[in-house]
Structure formats: C-alpha cells, structure tokens
Length: 414
Image: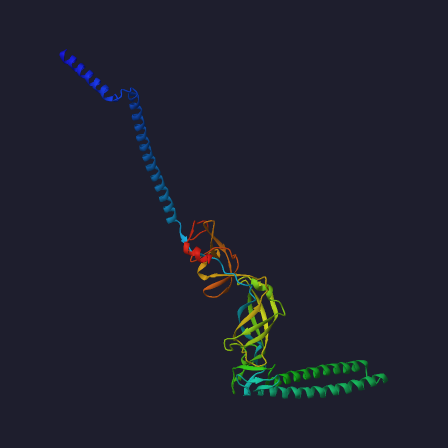
C-alpha cells in the first residue's frame, strides 16, 4: 500500500509539472488548445510527404515500364531507308535493240543432176539479176534430149502419114470406093498419131527445161554470202537426196529490222511511223527507218509487239545481222518513273516493290520498261509520291511494321 500511494503521488507531481511547464509566461490559457492543433498539422504534413513520395515512386516505375515497352517495340520494328521514284519530263523516245536482216535472203539450189563445170562469183560479190553464177555439166540430160528429139521427129512423120491416109480415105468414101469402117479407122489412127506427137513434143520441152537448169542465174540483185560448191562437185537434185545448196544470196539494198516493242509502248508502233537507227560502228551517224508492218498481236511470253522497220541501204554501209539501236518516238501520255534496281523484289508472284504506307510495309506488283543497270524504268504500279523501300529484306511481307530512318527521311525530303 505504501508503494501504491507513493507511485500515485509521483504521477500527480509529474502531471502538475507538465501543466506548469506548458503555461505561458503571461498566464494565457489558449496555449493549451494550440498545442494539439500544431501537432495535427505536423502529422498531416508528414503524411502528405509520404504520400507524395509513394506516388512519385509509382509514377517513375510506370514511366520506366512504358519507356521499356516503347524501346522494345522500336527495337523489334525494322528500320528501312526509303526514296521517292524519280519522275522527269514525259519520255520523247525509247531506244530498243534490234538486228538487221536482208530484205530477201535465199539459198540457191540446182534443179538438174550433173557435175559443176565452173562458177563465176565468190562470197562478197555483188551481182545483178540474171547474171550467170555457175554452169553444171549434164551429159545424161543431153543424151536424153537428143533421143527425145528423135522420137519427136518420128512421131511427126507418123502423124503426117496418118493425116494423108485419113484425107484420102475420106475422099474415097464419098464415091463408095472404100468402106465406112476403113475410113473411120484411118481417122482414128490420125488422132492417135497426133497424141503421140504431142507427147513427144512435151518430153522434148521437159528435157530442154532440165537442160536450161545447167546454167544458174542470179534471181535478184544482191550479194553472194555463201558458196558451198566447187568445180567437179557432183550435183544431185533428186527428190530422194538432200538438196545441195550451191550459193546463198541476200538483197541488201534495203534491210529489215524486227524490234519487240514493250506492250506499254504499243500505241507508238503505228504503220508509217519513222525511227532513227544508230550503230556502235558508226558513232554520231543515224539511219532513217520506216515502220511498215506489225504483228498486231502481243506476245504473251514477253509482253511485246513485234514490228518491222525497213531501212534504205543504198550506200551498203549496213550489213545483214548487225546490232542496231532503234530510237522510236512515243506519245506524250506514256509516262514512267525510275527507281534503283536494289528496290526490286523477285517473288513467285512476279516482280514487286516494297512501299511504306501508314507505318507498314506494302508489296505492290510493278512492270519494268527499260533497264539502265543501276536504275530501272517502272511503267506501271508506282506513283511519284510512293515511298519505296531500298534494299528490302527477302523476308519482307505486307503488313510488317517498319520505321523510316531519319537519315533516309532527310534525303528523301531534299
């Protein structure tokens, strides 16, 4: 009990000391009410600080996660370089490759059997129509012709005798000196002799024609491009044997040039249109050609129209088989763009180009006009405002998200 009372008294003394220490010097009792209010404000400030710290920590972590996600997406998105197709003035002409051909190019064969007696022109010789090229010796044909002429003379004599007999019998039958049967037989014999004489005459003409084939003449003005025989060669023109080509001639005063024109330029290939031809062996010199005919059909394998130009060659500068460049004028409405060759994609579906549209790759089919090596002409499938992907990956497919490199974008803008 003494202990409890002592403890209680000590507590009361402590309480009194606290009350005395909190009283202001002037004895104002409002200080006792202000003390709990200040403590509450201090605690509230501490709580706000703690909440702010927590919120800032959560926000920084959310922003870090968002930035990480963005960085991950950017790292996963391929960065590509793009360029806009180059569009110049409307093309005024196209240059197409072609080769010259002789206007008339033909082999010359023999029409009779024998031995080559002599020839008069070699390769490179320019001959006129009707000039003698070679002679063939045909002893068999000569002997057959002699026999045929003799048979024809015999047939002529028999015909004359039959005609005389027929006339005499027809005169005698009027007086009843001969019978009608004998007269008819004489007339019939005359008809038979006449047919035999005609057959002999036809045989003579046939052999004479074969004999005329002993001499081989130039069928047109031209140049001898081949000579495939020599003196003493056996000439066999029989149907059972492979015919032997004696000469090969080409008419080069006018040449033909066949050119495949791409389908997109087919409207420019009109009959009567003119074109200039150039050759590497004649730098700075042009030759005038005229479009004379077209195939009027597009080749499905090459998508081209075959046209023919005729070129005057009075100077004989152009040779058959020469490689030429044909400069063909095209209409104004035929427009195209050019892009680097590295932008092309060769796929199973055909030739394609990758474009950047709405942040995604899109593959579009294109058609090529001319190939310049480092660049190609695109005649359909692209516009000047399309952003073309340079050096696209083989795995690129439509719908793939892509990002345009900053350097590429600056280059395109320039």
